[in-house]
Length: 425
Image (tube, rainbow, N blue to C red; front, side, top):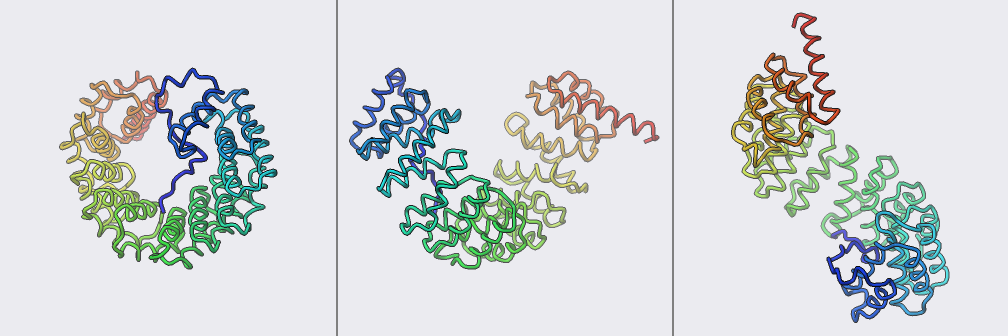
C-alpha cells in the first residue's frame, strides 16, 4: 500500500493565488466554508495553508471558535488550521493541543476523533501519546488506525509500545501503518526488531506484501541477520522494479556476505533503478565479486548508475588494485566534467586517495575552473594521501578557498608530506 499523508495534515503548497494573500482571516475562513466540495476541494486546503502560514493569535482564536461549532465542516476547518498552525515555525503549540484535546473530550463523532488524532500527530507534546495510547484497543477499526497515525515519528517508549502492539492488530491496514511507522522511527532496538520479525513470520508475502516488505526492510536496515533468508527469497521472485529497488537499497546496511552473489546477478536488470540499487547494496563490500560488479556498473549507460558505482569504487571501498585504478581512470577520461561533474569528481578523488599520479594533471586543470568551494574539502583531504611533489601546485590553489575545512585539509596535506619527508619517505 502506498503511504500518503492524510489530508487532515495538509501538505498542499500555496498555489501562488496572490489575490488571496491580503484577505482577512475571516474572509479566508468564509471562502473555505463556501467551497461546495468542502474539504475535498483543493481550494479549501489552499485557504487552510494561508491561514496556517499566517499563524497569529487572531487565527488561533478563530480556529478555536470553529472547533466549538456543531457544524461538521466548520469543526473540521478549525481542527485542520490548528493541526499545523504556524507551519514549520509552529505558533501556539500548547494552546493548539489544549483545544484539540478539549474537542475530543466533548465530541462523540468517531470521524472527528480521527481528524483530531491526525492533527495531534503533528505536535511534539507528551499529552498526545498519553491520550492516544488509551484508544489502542478501541473496538472501532478507524479509531485504532487514527491512533497509529497520531503516534507516527515519535521516539517515545509508550508510543513505540503502542505501535508494536498495533502491529499485531487483526486489521491488515492497521498492521501495515504500524509497522511502517516503526520503521520511520529509525531506532535499532531488540523489541522493534522482534516486531519486524513477527510480521515477517506471520504475514503472507503474496496477500499482505506491503506489511511483509516493511517488516523485511526494517530488519535489513537494522542489520538483523534474520533478514537474509527472506531477502534472498524475495530476490528470486518476480517483483516490481520499484519493490526490488527498495529491497536492494534496504540491504545496503546488511553485513552478510551471503547477499553478494544474488545481488550481483541483478547487475544487468533492465531497470536502471534496480541496477543503481545493486550498486548501493554492494557499495562498501570489500569482496572481489562485489568490486568487479561495481566496476562493471561504473560503465553503465545510465548516469545515476555510473554515479553510484563510481562513488562506491572511488571512496567507499578501501581496496587498491590495478583494476580499480583503471576503472576510475576510465571515468576520468570518459566523463565530461561540465555535464557529469559528480562522476568525474568521484573518480578524481578515488585516484588521489590511491596515490595515482594520473590524477595530478586533471586536478590542476579542474582547480582552474570556477567550481563551488564545497568540493575543495574532499580534494584537499584526498591530496594528503598523494605522495607526489606536483600536488603542491593544487594545494597552493586550494589554500585561499573560503571554507575553513578546506584550509584545514591543505594544512593536513602539507603536514603529512612533512612527516613523510622526516622519515625519509
